[in-house]
Amino acid sequence: MGQRNMKLKKGTLIFFSLLTFLCLRRFLSYEERLDELWLHEFPLEYLTSLETHSLNLSARLMTTVEPARLYLEEVFNLKDTYTCELLSPSIFQDGSVYFRTLCGERGKGGFSFISKSRLTSGAIEEVTLLGLVPPSYLSYEENGFEDCRGFTWDGTSYLICSVQSGRASRKQVAVTLGKKNQVLEFNVSGLELSRIEKNWTPLVHNRNLYFIYSFTPFIVLKCNVVDWRNFHCDVEHAEATESVSDFTVLRGGTPCVPIDHKRYLCISHGRWVYRDSRRRSKRSDSNVFFYRGLITVIGTDPWGIIGISSVLHFPQTPCSLKETQKNVEYPTGILKEGNRIILGAHFKDEICKFFEYPNLLQQVEPFTYPVPLTHRQIESFLSQELSKILKNPNWC
Image (cartoon, rainbow, N blue to C red; front, top):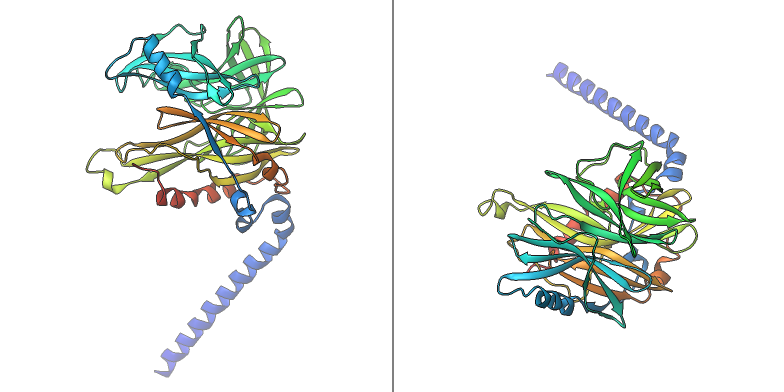
């Protein structure tokens, strides 16, 4: 019995000695990296939302596209189950607004084209068709120009859109807006493009054109027109981390507008995937996708994300049916007028609305982190947002 107790005590002593050694080793390793940690990374507990910094976003619903939608349905003489949908608004400084427009029978396909309107005195005027792409019959799975973002660079206004490039593949193209509409391809050096390319975010800085190719990891392209049919892009900045994944939350939304000469603001979107076990009995795919807007602050010296908010809550937004697989609030258009921001977004892939934020820039302007946030910090923070979304999913 005594020998057994001695062996037990000896084993316990060895165990605690080993545990002490491992803890001490980890502590010393942490001490050696302490300076590097504070210079290059922020502890996660410091990564809080903009709303915890006393943001008071008094958003106001300006207008919807309902009158313009009804006008189009009248033009095309659509009846019964046929309808028109104006989505993905792009807003320019002169008040012109471009939409991705679908007219046809819901769920079965229809005509897809780009249309133009104007935002005047807080209302959308009548819609005109853009002669860029002749309306063509397309299924909703192969829906032509999609999720365009508008920007102006070197005196020319453009849309950058995702378009069908083959079966289950998409690419980004630019469209010039003016008397003569041209479609320009993108050639990228130093980066292998994905089978499906979407959500490139325009940013014009010091008269140069950049696109945020990916937010997490943070990758920036610098682009120039080489001829009337092509942009050429090089990698300006790439975060040293793993490659771009379809599982990241943070993605492109609106173009970026300047806060000052080094910082820019854009309303990005997050995509959260939730596996709902209750849906398995109804359909094979139990995943539900939530799309929500987020305020993102971009630094250019050095390049990186230096601010990120919690999920934005838009006033008077339509709800989504519980049976739908996608719960969508998707910002694509932004206009800066002094400190006022006008934001255009579509909901449920059905309806588009415009919102006014009179004091957004005033509150974001003093907000920065001293160093860019890392891919892992941002994605860890945003993963916590899913629980907030599920508490208020905006389901009908």
